[in-house]
Image (cartoon, rainbow, N blue to C red; front, side):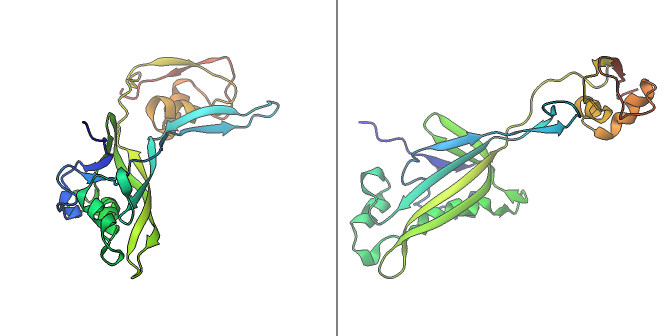
Amino acid sequence: MLGMTKAKFKVLDGANRLLNATAVIGGAGIPCIFNPSEFTIQRNVNYAKHNIPGLDRPVLQFISGEAEVLSVSLTFDTYSAGVGAVQPQVIASTAAPDAVKLDVRTYTEPLMKLSTVNSDTHAPSLVEFVWGSISFKGYIESITQRFTMFNMFGKPVRAVVDMSLISDKKDNNIRNSPDRTKARSVSEGDRLYNFAYAEYGDCSEWRRIAVENNIDNPRRLEPGTDIVIPPIID
């Protein structure tokens, strides 16, 4: 019979030494005692809002997209984990007397250390959340461990870890090259710095467009007219 597929975190940039890898962690990654009941993936897009007198709504100008963020909440329990846990040490701990229950930080601290700086890369480790066919690669953006149960000696035996990973995915979209001359139609609310950012990725390049089109006042563009976007490489 096939066992339950467990969620885990893998370190991808050679920083396993940060985890002080032991038999608890192993070489296959940091295990989750329980699979999450849910997780979310969110992505935001930024727009500039230009308020034009007389219009019912602002004119939106796309600025940039943001990276996807995975948020997940994980439960760790070494007191009464039950059938949901498959790690032998956890099962042994739940069956042991209260005085010798395993400290739950054995499992939460390796996750917390993923947010520390790797001495080689001078940045936190790149990690991958893996659960069956699900895979999300990124960096720890935030992580919080909350202890919710203790044994009679004050040892934490149950905790919840809330964490967010920001994706490391690169922007591979192919765009029109800025080294070619183009023509663009002016819409209500457009400004030269908007065209400069959209075409060159630099708002300060608006002067290049103004000179090409003999525009004296860059704040006053006539809607419906066409302007030339010159190449950035002359």
